[in-house]
Image 1 (cartoon, helix red, strand yellow):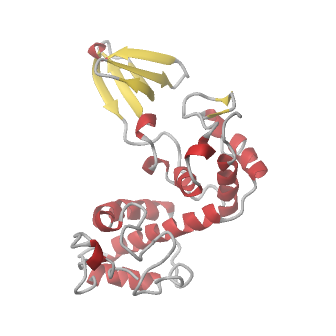
Image 2 (tube, one colour):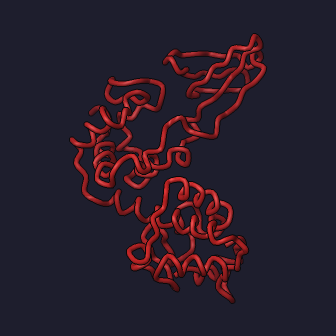
Image 3 (tube, helix red, strand yellow):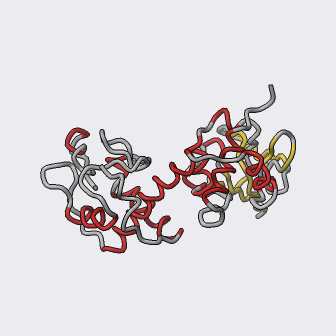
Amino acid sequence: MQSCVSSARAAAVLLVLSPLLSGQQRSNSGAEIANGRELFSVHCQPCHGPDGDLVPGVSMRRAEFKRVSTDDEIVRLILSGVPGTGMPPTNLPEASRVAIVAYIRSLHDASARAAGPGDAARGRELFEAKGGCLGCHRVAGKGSRKGPDLSDIGSTRNAAALERSILDPAETVLPQQRYVRAVTKDGKTITGMRLNEDTHNVLLIDENERLVALAKSDLREYTLLKTSPMPSYQGKLSSQEVADLVTYLLSLKGLP
């Protein structure tokens, strides 16, 4: 999956696959799925896109492929490629190919859960109790300011995007919500969510919910963090709990 000959030729790469994610599945850990995501981004994403749907007729989220029907067949396909198409063979070891398949399956599972029925009332309970979301987020004036305010998140994000933000938050951080780490010339370290930035200054909310304005000329180090402080809930919440939480978030449309 390393080269992109053309979209037309790549359309023959993968396969119709309703049975793929329902038969001959392995049990995959969160670590294996995370590893698969990294491998997918390098070897598959250039042609298939981050959601696996750039090749015409192929949608990994909907489990639509063209030549396979099981996980094992995809593992072998990644190794051998498809002659005469944009899908080249690879020399990836089997463990890496299995990890990629685990991540592909997680894309489909996430979409299936997001599309499934959820209960907004139960989702709110999860948000405020078990999930601990108010420790960082704020809804309708309640909660912390350390993370993005979610009062109108249901107006700006769809179910699939919310699902990804719960299960893989590092992948879905918006540029305007990146966290930064600043070290002043006297050695003080400040970490927080960036609110505004220009050539000379940066404004952020620190870990104690304080508004901090920094002049870049007073800093000896300034780093835009690539990771998210939000933990992944992969494996921590059941499929039903994730559906409930997504349904609650979709209900947040802001004040009238």
